[in-house]
Length: 122
Image 1: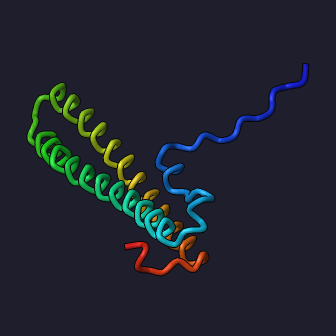
Image 2: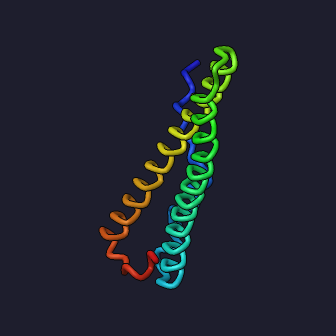
């Protein structure tokens, strides 16, 4: 039996929502709405990521202060492990924020190439 054809790379829901349909390409009002929705979704994702990063900063600061104030090596190790986990999560969120910023820049470049009026992206 021949091997199965390779599967197409999966697209997440946000990526599907960001791509305009063929029917939308004909109607300027629908194009405007599609571009606004796409950019709004990306900006909302960026805003949520930045808020999450800011929220993570407080426990990181608290754990850092707690780490330096501990004398007991066992307690210091436990606090240090928690702090490292929090820092790893913070780094992951920062990487996601950079990815979303790149998506926004790519969408803006795509809009520029498609001669989309700048007002549609606001």
